[in-house]
Length: 301
Image (cartoon, rainbow, N blue to C red):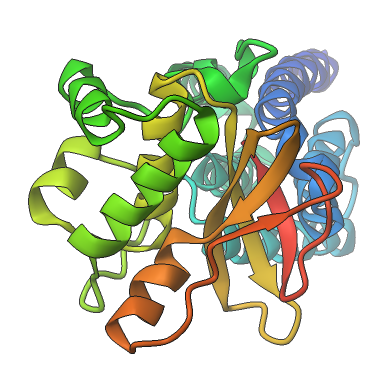
C-alpha cells in the first residue's frame, strides 16, 4: 500500500515539475524568438535545453537509465554554457540554472520518496524565482512594439539628457541623412575604443558611455541607435560572429534614410580614424537583413 502511494506521489510530482519546466522553457523561447530565427546554432542549444524536461515524465527504473539521464543533463548544461559564452546575455544564464535545478532534483528525489514533498516545494520556489527573473529582464523583448527600430527600450535605452545632446549634435541638419552622418562624425571624433574592457555580460549604459567617452562596439552601436531613434530615424543594432573565428563577435548598425538601409560601423571608423585610414562610412544595402561580408548575423534588434 505504501509503495503504491509513494509511486502515485512521485508520479504527481513529476507532472508538476514537468509543467513548471515546460512553462519556463516556453517563456525563454518567447524571449529568444528573434535571436533563434537568425542563429541555427543557438536554436539547437535551445532545443537541447528543452528536451530534458521530458525526463520528468519518464519513470527511471534502473541505475543505467539514471546514468544516461545524468549524462544527457550534463551535456546540455555544457551546451548552455557555450551558448552563454557566445551571446553574453543575461537570459542565457537562466538555461544553465534550470539544468542545475534539474540535476539537483534528480539526484535527491529518485529513491528518496520521503523527501518528495519538501523537494516539490523547493523546486517550485526555485523555478518560480527563475520565471520571475526571466519576465523581469525580458519584458521589453517579449512585448516590444512593431517599430522596435524607433523604440527606447530593449537593450537600447536613453534619457532626456541624451536626447538633448542628440538635438545639439544635429542642430542645423534638415534631413535624416545629415543627422545620421552628424551623429557618426561626432562619435568618431569624440570616442576611443576601450581595450581594457572585457565585460562578462554585455549591457548598455548610456550615461557611462557618454561620460567616459570610451567603450566597445556594443556601446558605440547602441549609442548611435539611441541618437538616431531619438530623432525618429529608423536604426537597428546588429550582432554578428566572424565566419573565420566564432570567438570574434562584433556589433554595428543599420540605419534607414533616403528610402534604403545603410550599413554603418562606428567602431571600425573610430579605429580607422586613429590609424589615419579611410573610413568605412555608410554603405548601401539591399535590405536590413542583407548578409554581411565578414560576419554571420546572429541578431537584429
